[in-house]
Image (cartoon, rainbow, N blue to C red; front, side, top):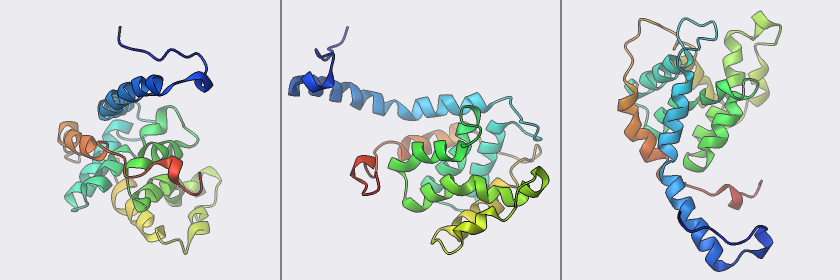
Length: 191
């Protein structure tokens, strides 16, 4: 068995205890991309009533962004934008954004966080909601970016005949993006 901290309450931890925990945490962090890719595969098979399953939709969204010349970080955000669908049905965009936040730019984080309400433009009126709910964010510096993401990559990625890239082609991108946080959420002023 590997070394473990000796305390049962954090208040009693020592520098040696936290060195052990830091070592474990570093290894755990290295394995994050694999865990994310494993969780993405949970989306296979569930169509949610769409013409393709959620996994195919995610890969297709990323494929379209990649083929359009978007950078690696953006493409990974496109790949993972709906990863929360299976465990956060009512707020999947928030879950995906929270997962991505330490590793991506503020713009990409904002796009993922708000894409759900922006996607509503295409269907909210059919489920009794205002399709223009996204307009509450008009004037935000990333409003047009989120609008573009939904229009060019998300709303049109339910095509069973589209030739998607393989998940293996995205794997190195996921590993790169999640290799090191760009920021610590604990250092943010709004935390």
